[in-house]
Length: 117
Image (tube, rainbow, N blue to C red; front, top):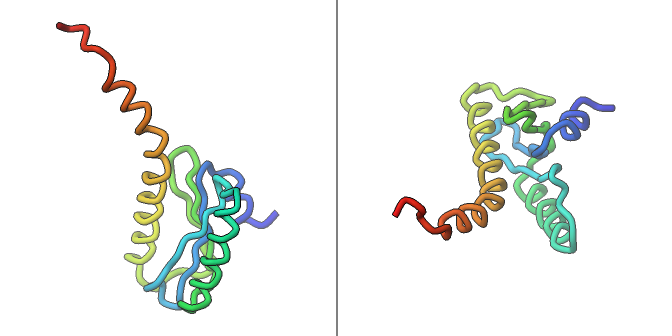
């Protein structure tokens, strides 16, 4: 099994990374959790069109294992700040994905009566 595929399988959240030659333009494509349904097919078609329009190519995978992002790139950006920016963008992506699960729980918690009164 390829290392990038193994990383995606071991991760609770994983994305493919697409970038231009100097990593100044990047895009993520969800690998895990696996998108499903008709919207995922249209989303994949839109992503493919957008990646081609912007001249991006697949450069690696980022996955979150035990809460820690792990990155595997086929080429490294010359500027270390671009690598840090990829990690930060991925962490933000993870936050956006997981906050959807927390909102209903927080709403139920807020609706509980205050027993201190």
